[in-house]
Image (tube, rainbow, N blue to C red; front, side, top):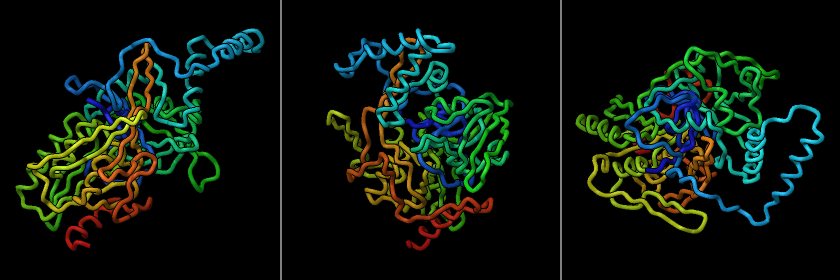
Length: 427
């Protein structure tokens, strides 16, 4: 089973910013299904520590871990000699204490990966790797936010989990985290940066934050907490509209959506709103199965690797949700597996997308477990929608764009309101 991952919050199922880790964005706290969904910027991550669950499928980011086999150099012209020369000169000339050999090796690896210009191909040290190799159970410890590593290397708050510590402490979407305590996280890789933000419930995360329109950095202390978020939340809205929110594609996401839909359809709704906002992703097979719930026979997604190999994934007739009129809510926190589902429903003209542009995480990572417990996650393929649109870097444009302003009053949701209006009027 493969995982379309991108979360690194501290939740390990998708990477959300509860300080956990997940499929499409990283979260530092998960988003609840019935809570207000603030707009989220690019790649998000979960900053939470997921509680292990014994029955969940084996951990992976997108593809199964590769066995430890001898490595063939990527390039015959790699200059090993210059590395040896640098180490020798440092040993002879450096005025100060030189780190141990493993620390130097880790630094060299990270430096090499920076030349690839791919934030998802990453080296993860043993401590963080152990966290990411736990699977999620829906319980996380962290600050309750989703983060995004911007193109300029700064870690940005993408969205907040309503009612959780980060929101209560005054953290805002768009804030940039410069340091945690005395530890600067500027210039660190995504996984490493969130490892400083996550932590046990009851401990403090002292965040140094740069806020747009505020001259000087501000300090906000967030007390980490255990955060429990349902994977699926559902209810009947006014006007006989059914509502289902999926917060991540865990190992049982399709069954949970199917069960919720069965209960809602018994009430004869006139339409369905499927909310994928701030859903960072998760298991690939679940993305295909969730798509199949709403689609008849046809293509769901295409995966292509660097050598030109291609794999196609399909849906089939006979599922519960194939006929009900529906809208899918998306935003910049909708990533990876969420984009596969939303892209399939949009291309197949099964649903209208309402909200803002999605994250654009359309690549597949293979986690390689290394001998010291560290891990190298390598981008091996990219995703395309049924109409062969690239997801990676581009994201999905909604059919009806509706912003979610930062100053939206608590309890109001303009994107949800627009979805209800569309299902009622068809416009």
